[in-house]
Length: 433
Image (cartoon, rainbow, N blue to C red):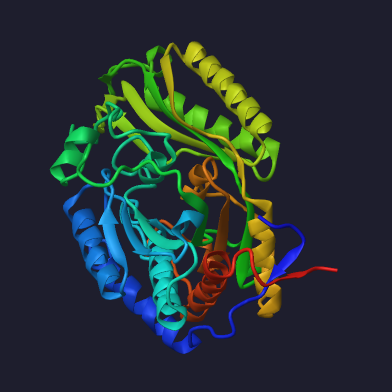
């Protein structure tokens, strides 16, 4: 990247009203794949609804004039060939999968935005200098299998289709089985791992309240917090609820309740930006007249500083062990995710700020409290993450919402950004005095 430069932006941008309508139409259309009875979307990796959505996106990318292909794990790409392809590839996009009963913006907006931007650039400016692509990553959320970033992880080399983790979903279906059932696997598409990507740009809803509270239209992300996820299993003794005295109980749920309270207090003592969440809890046998004998729950811990994050998790483990020992319970804590904090590329983030200033758009430099594919891609290429506001900070819910004008503003910034990187990069820069 070039330092101390301001890119010369394109003279023409998409009509904001038409752009807003186009984005809303695409998001509504995509939300039909996986629509569930709860008013939201449930689209898990390699499920039927996931495959239908990827196939439909494949067709829509073709209609937009892009060259389309899948890789071997199911990542979907739409490509505009560059006139100088040896310059490499500029990539934008996000993920297609959702959480259970999720909203229509998370992940999908970055795909809809990239499609709109590429279609406009191709129609208005023709072929770029370097290759320009949009990607619909096959997975990011970790909703079906205890693993995250399977899509971008294969692109970056974190994972390999030849060494699929031996994990299963809640129904006992393995990741490998699900992948092959969906028509993917080794040599079922182009090789997933890539070494030609020069930059990755992700446009995403904020999933928080900061931009709305600060009344800013664009979030320029400096970095993404680190996070650790655990599965915790606490085992006591199931017994009759009426005949087992309180003093003689080894109640797994009572022990877990104390652990959860300790977790909350510990997180509060660290202060912002530390967050710790117990999001799922399973009680066995789960009967009204039986003392709980076993409880399995999840833990999600996040902070922007890796030292603080590790220290917190160690203190948490010691506290849990003390509770278990005092109550006569067995504790098994298994960590299945360890994502270090990741900083975005400095020059790319500066470029986003320059674009916002040039277009008179309000923006805020900030950290992301949620994980994104950009943090995985940063290991292989410069990356940038751009936010648009989320009403009420609501996300992973059917109630998540961003206004059409806010969506369109984000796409206009992305369009500028992609033009600079793919059409004008390395030429026609003005020095900053």
